[in-house]
Structures are given as structure tokens and as C-alpha cells.
Image (cartoon, rainbow, N blue to C red; front, side, top):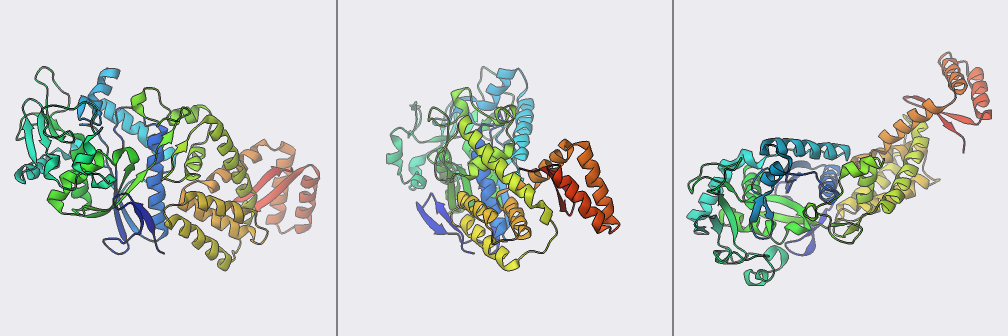
Length: 474
């Protein structure tokens, strides 16, 4: 099936043509593990998961690399200045940087797993690739793209790279205005960025390494170039990230990579829009208070409700978050789980293959057309309400949606059934167990009589491959 994605670099919807037929390699910018991951970040990671699931549905072999940033990300993204975020986190909690990295990585993975995201093929840590980052800087130095600011570090001279800023349609001169909050007068150009930072002479850093230029640590941008080249090769298919990364971080990645690899380093750039908070502002850790999955769990929401909420939007459009919207989303998701539970009696029955193939292909087509997750949910609502599709086929289609969107409808329906069975009166459960025994003995008359008795009491028994469920009549 034809796959189309919006390429930030060309600013148009393009047919995806893999570098290797049937295979896709993509790199996604991962978390900086100095604090909890907020819901806006998690929206980005969910879109990566939808992208991966779309390729899997199209029978691609997917190699996904997502980095863990545990060094070099300074508090001012715009100007490579301020404290290292990891060191700041350690000072905030009076722990070692290594402990901070482990704790918040584990918390991130907890959120990642609760949201049912498929694990990356490789999840490299920046601190494990210091040698590769030093080698990257050395290559750029040999090519004449670097200069030193004494006492500060080694910087990239963006004036040497003619295509700087092309990712967002700018040029070097066009990116200067507003490109940096506080211009470092020692830099040759406002857009120049740090490749290697020297450790301060008046303080001992917890993370620092020897290098040809002295003791220090890599700039934030170096890790993604070094690790992607190492793990995906000098040319790969897709690079993703939040839209806030496109103008600086990703522009810098291109500038420091393409002199070494040649252009294009990456064929397709995908950027995901912001999640907005109730004030209409971008959700961000830098604002202080922010919402993470703990807030979702504390309020009693199933993590799948947040995943469903994200799937209802489109990655190129900003999405406004509020608890009122989450309430409405939870109601919609719960209603769908209820419908799926009602289909479970058809478990194991033969499906209509022709009808299944038609709806299956329609859903894959929607996802392949620039990740239209909301269109898949519309199709779900349509087929699950249809009187022209048997329950077994509907159930099979829901199973496929669970693969395509990862919404765990089948899992939640099974849990609902178990909960309802536990909540049924003991006398009804006893009748259901007697009926099950009668069926096992092929005593159909007794089984039918017991079913009628259960129905008369206001309950219904639904049979399935994994046993039966008892539900209260509406």
C-alpha cells in the first residue's frame, strides 16, 4: 500500500520510498531524564508508536532508535547556555547524576509501558557514546567547520554550512533574528552551537570526560548525530521529534552530519505538534509545574484513555488538554470497551473474510495516508455499530485495531467481563456454573432451562472461547 507522510524538509506530503525495500530505519529524539516526562512529550512518543505500527501493518521490518539524553542538555535550548539539566536535577534532589538518570529513565519506561508503546529496537544512552561524539567533533574540525572559544568550548561555525536552517525554510541570515535569546558575543554567528563544552574550572562536574580539547562534555546536539550514524548508518529513512526541535536542535543535527555523510542525511523529517495546557500554552517542563502520567493515574483514568485522546487528533495539529476533555474521552473509550465485551461471545467463531479484508484495508489506508489515526477511530465506530457485520468479524477487526493503534480494547473488555462476573450475585454465578456443567455433559435441555432462569433474574450469560461472562441486562 502507498504510504504518504508530510516531510518537514520539503514542506509537502510525499510518497514514502524506503532506502531498502521492505525495511525502514527511523530515529526519534528521546527524553532528557532529569525529571518526569510530561504529557506533551508523551504525545510525541505516542505518535512515534503510531508511525511504527503503521509500518508494521504494511509488513515493513522496522529498526527504531530512540536516544536517552543523560548529559549535555543545557537549560537554555536556544543558546547552549545555563546549567546541564542533569546536573541541575541532581542538585535539586541531592542525588548523583547517575541516580537521577536511572530513576527518571525508569519512570519514563513505566509511562511508556503503561501507554502500551512498542519498545525501540535500540535505546542508546548519550553517556555510552562519548567516543563517537568526540570522533564526530574531530571530523568536523578536520573539515574546517569548528572554532574554539577559550574557556568555553568547541563551536560549530554555521556560516560554513550553506544549507543551515533549510529544514524550516530559513537561511543562516533568516534564522538570526530571534534565533538565540542571549547572544554570546564570543560566537561568530548567533546560530553557532556548542559541540564540546569545557568543564568549569571552579567546580567539579559529575559527568566529564577527557578529550583532545580538554576535560569536558559533549553538546546536546552531538549525541543524536553520532548515535544515529552508528546505529542506522550514514543515511536513513526517517527522523522524528516535536515541532519545537525543528528550528534549532534538528537544524544543528543536519549541519553537523551532512558535511560528514553527504546530503540528504535523512530522507524524511516528521515533526509532531504541541500539546496545549488549559491556558493555551505549550506544555513544557521549563514552565515549572507540568502534568505527567502520575496526574492521569491519580485521577483514576486508565492510561489508554490518554492514548485514545491522542489518537483522536492528528500529529500536525495542536491538541488542547483539559480534565473535562479527558472525562469525555474516558466515557467514549469505556463505551467502546463495553461494546467489545458484548462481542466476546463470538470468540472463536468463523469470520466473513471478505468483509474483514475490506475494513482492514480501509484502516491501513487511513493510517498510511499521513497517520490519520482519527479516521481509523471513525471506521471503528462505523463497523462496530453496523448491523451488516457479524460479531465474529467485528471482534477480529477490533483485534486488528489493537495492533494498529495499540488501544487494548480486547484486554480491557476481558477485564470488564471478569469484573462483572465477580460482581454478579452468588446465586446467579451458581446457576451459570450449573449450566456450564450441563453443557459439558451435552445436557442441552438443562442448559437452556438454566439460561432462562438466569435471564428471568435480570442477567445474561454470554459464552466465549475462554469461558462465559455474566452481564446485567440493560
